[in-house]
Length: 168
Image (cartoon, rainbow, N blue to C red; front, side):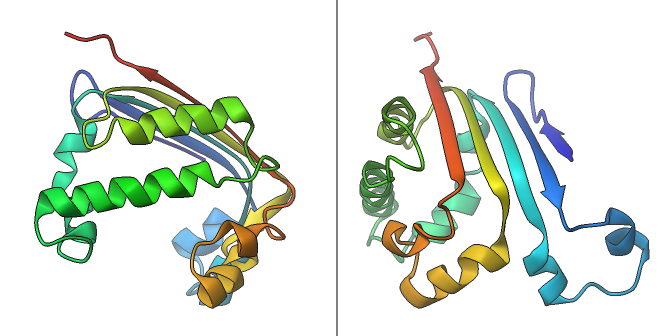
């Protein structure tokens, strides 16, 4: 499965995934799909490439609505709080999930917020497959926490590379 978005002449998002336990014919033309069916859909590989020059800024309405006013009294305070939260989240990614270089790349990406200009390439490999049903119980019980996600993500490896764009 592959999705490519090129909203303008400079930005490009490409997402591909190998899915398991799904027959797209059932979803598109078949009977109604149950929530249990959706929770069983798995993924073994995800490949994400983002060449960002203006794409992130063009999505400001979507991401700002998610953080403001919940995370700050002003949009700037909310953006800074979200950046701090993301920095802490990336810093605590377990070494079993992502190597030092990948964590450093994600840290650099987060540091560039709210104007990340550059190229991101990220892959996820789940040897035994991974589904929403695998991780949902941990998130429901504890919220997004590496401690509770350690078991469901035991066979998952993430690689990331972030290359900032040259200054204009």
